[in-house]
Image (spheres, rainbow, N blue to C red):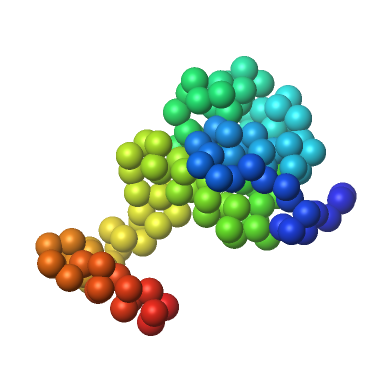
Length: 131
């Protein structure tokens, strides 16, 4: 199996929608639509329609299977970008953090407090510095 470093992936990422980004990742990993479709138990047409933007981004379970099929476990930035773009187009919270948010009431309280504060940007800037 060929090992590909993240620096070696030539991805078209600027202003990419989920399908465009998925196609870029798939092509960079040198995996055909047919190979990906077979690996995730979907039709090539279904995968093609996602890449063209004709189908919505997949839900968490299928997205996780796509990430595994593309061997992206070692590429957290790419994996997270897929989660984020899928969530944005679905108008949802990224799948990988949704459960975490629901399990931690303090995070929900912090988000709501910041959202209602006139100093919202400063609050998030401080949180970002801490992290």
